[in-house]
Image (cartoon, rainbow, N blue to C red):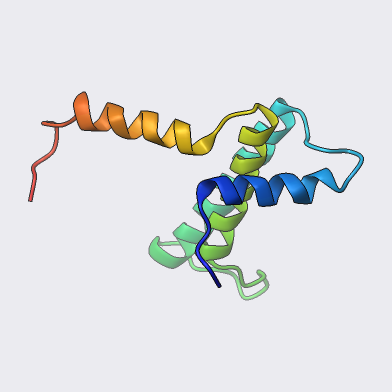
Length: 107
């Protein structure tokens, strides 16, 4: 599978959602959904790396799958608010390169 840019990811999600009359959920509904997906990711992390083993009756999911769910909903939220995730990422990285440049011990 070919690598995709953030722009391509946002376009792919927008094309997928665009085929449905309902379109994107409201920002508040998507925030609730993002919170739900983060909870599912936290549960999987706890099963794999924490002290709480998965029950035999629980469906097998992976951390990879849950991170994918979080990413999808995050892209939906960004798209619905007309946020360019590449631009948002670049802005945050610049902040870390300047404000936090001496915060951590460099290798």
